[in-house]
Image 1 (cartoon, rainbow, N blue to C red):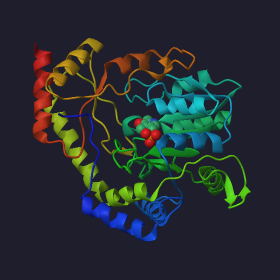
Image 2 (image 1 turned 30 degrees about the vertical axis):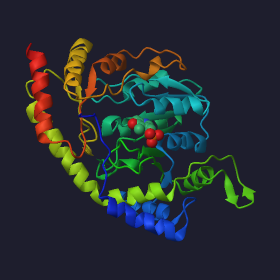
Image 3 (image 1 turned 180 degrees about the horizontal axis):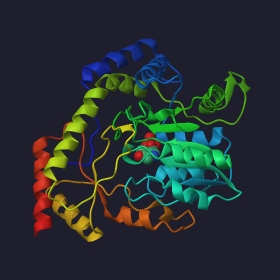
Length: 359
Ligand SMILES: *Cc1c(COP(=O)(O)O)cnc(C)c1O
C-alpha cells in the first residue's frame, strides 16, 4: 500500500538512548531536561530567539488567540486544515472567511479590506502547503486597521522567507510537530513570537496559569509536552536536512514524470526557500479527480483530498461566499510524499494517471 504520507522514523537505538535517560531521571513531563534541550536545539536550527514547545499545533493556535486577548471576528482562510477554523470558534471568536488566491492557494490580501468590520480584531492565515502568504500585504492591512496577525505555519518547518525562518513573522506564529508533518515529535507543536512579554504570558498559560507552585497569575490550560515526545524530536532533528533534500528529489521526480498530465501546481512565493512539505496537483474538474482517485485506490495507492471540503461549509460556522476556495477544494489532490517513497513508486503513480487521462 502507498499512503499519502508515512511518519519518518529514526533508527530505534537512537530513541532508546534518550528513553534510557528518562528511566534514570524518572522525570517524565513538566518542563523536563529533554523538553528544554529540544527547545534549545530548535532555536539553534531555526535561528530564533524565542519559542515554546507545546502539546500540539491546535493548542498552539488556541494559546495564540488567548494570549493576544482576541475577541470578536477573526479574518481567516477557508482553505486550510479544520484546526485553523475550529480553534477560532473554540476560543469564542467568529471566523470571517476571505477567499484565496487561485494560484498561491493562500488568503488573498486584496480581499481582506472588504471583510473588515468594527468587530474585526485579527487575521489568522495559513501558509498553505508551506508556501508563504503575502506577508507584507497582510501586515500592511493589519497596521492600517490595528489588527493582530497570527500565522498557522503547521506545514512550514524549514521554510525560509526572505532568508529568515518563516516562524518569525506575525505577532504570533504556530506550527505542528504531528507525526504526519515533515518534522515531528509524534504529537507536538510550537509557538513563536519575538515579543518577550507575550512569550512569558504564553509560558504561563501553557502551564495552567501557574506563577509558582501556589500562585496563579491568570487563566491557563495544560499545553505542556512530555519527555518522550521531546526525545523523538531530538532524534529526528539531525535528519531534517536529509528529509527536506529527499522530498525535493521526490518532488522533482514527480514534476518530470507528470509533465503529460493536465494539471496546475500552486505558484510558490518567490521570496521563499521551500521545504517540499506536500505535492498537490490541481485537476481540471472534480470528475477527473475522482477518476484519478478511483484508479489509484485500485492499485492500493491512497492520495488525499487535502483540503476538502472548504472550511466555510463546516456545520458550526456562518456560510460565506468563497467561490475560489470552493472550486479549488473540489479539484485538488495531494499525491503520496514521504521519506522512503521510491522513484519507482512515483513512476507507477504517473503511469496510472497518464493511462486514466488518455482513456
Ligand atoms: C496539522 C495541522 C494543524 C494541527 O496540528 P496538530 O498538531 O495535529 O494539532 C493545524 N493547522 C494545519 C494547517 C495543519 O496542517
